[in-house]
Image 1: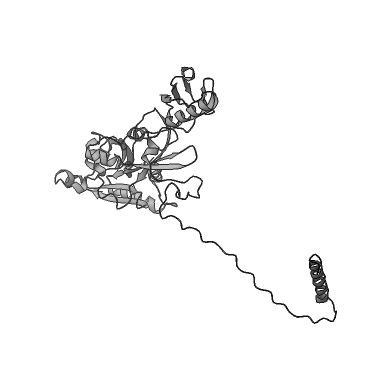
Image 2: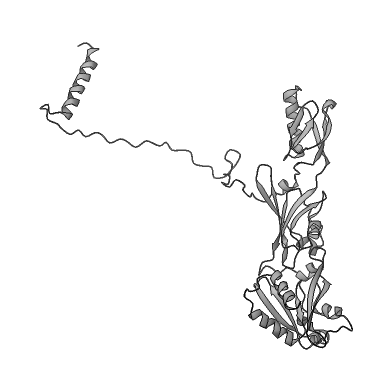
Amino acid sequence: MNPIAQPLSIQVVVYILSICLFTDCGVAQTSISLPKPRKPVILPTSPPPRTFGIIAPPPRESSPNPIEGRSSSQFSAYRLDIGDAISVLVQQHPEFNFVGAIDSAGNVVVPILGRLPLVGLTLEEVETKISYELSRTYLQNPPQITAVLAGQRPVQLTVLGEVVRPGYYTLAPGTQLSSVLFSAGGSTVDADLRSILLRRQLSDGTVIEETVDLYTPLITGKAEPQVMLQGGDTIIISRLEIGSDRDYDRRLISRTTLPQQIITVRLLAPTIPSGGALRNITLPNGSTFLDVVAALPVGDDLRINYDEVALIRFDPELGRVVTQSLNPVAAIQDGDISQNVPLKDGDVIVVSRTLLGEIFSAFNVLTQPIRDVFSFGTFFDRLFR
């Protein structure tokens, strides 16, 4: 048989069979069972490594700005930004030496080489970048570069949390964390100075955080932690959580330079011949009830009855107004320390049972409950203005 004709004869047979399957050609149709397709074979892959190393780095977060672990090395590295000035020395090639500031576009002008973007780089990274650009364009071998900070930009910060005046602050370069608290009016009585959060966003969008403890060095007599603050940093003063203040000496902190220095306490007392007067008394932070008694004006028209004294305070932890009866005689003569309570900013001392009843009657007719310290102070301003 002709080997070339054999494939043609097979094609003819297949063509005739296909016609018989769809037409009545007298040929018996039989069902043909085709073999089931096999599942694709998946070759086994090597198991993932048990630890992450250089070959298999840890997976990145899906968030565009992940908050990475606390890294002191990241916070100690100063990163350049607009307003900084650098001095660059190129060894054996003095024609490339320069001192320049980073302009509003984030560039610095390098002699002969031109403009280079340097925002977000450390000084070590600047040395590497300039050395690479010079060797790539003008020099045969990468030169040795020395870059130093010639001028530092002002530190623009955001201060949040338990401070008297949260907001935006522009401070001098090298400002310490304790000075930032002082500029913001000091920490509040509810601040936890053991947990001050410093947050910084890098040029690639990554956010890093570090926790700074100012409380422990203060009570142990050690130096303040040295934190290099940079423009764009956010400082968050944490709130002292309920149950975590067992080893936290608020009284000691109140007499240091870190918290709010001056507090305002209100004294509500009846006047002669009738009525009531609301007086503001400014005291150093850390003052007690007896300090208010000592600060009362002599020969005033106030009628002070020391047998009818009560302290009214808005407690943010409870979210409501609390009241405590005080006995100045027991505090002075008997030395009862429970009666000489530490005061907080915004406290109200009432020295008349009649006025105290009027206050609680006004509380009962309020259409909206008092929910914060501000509304608490506004209530007294409207009631006794």
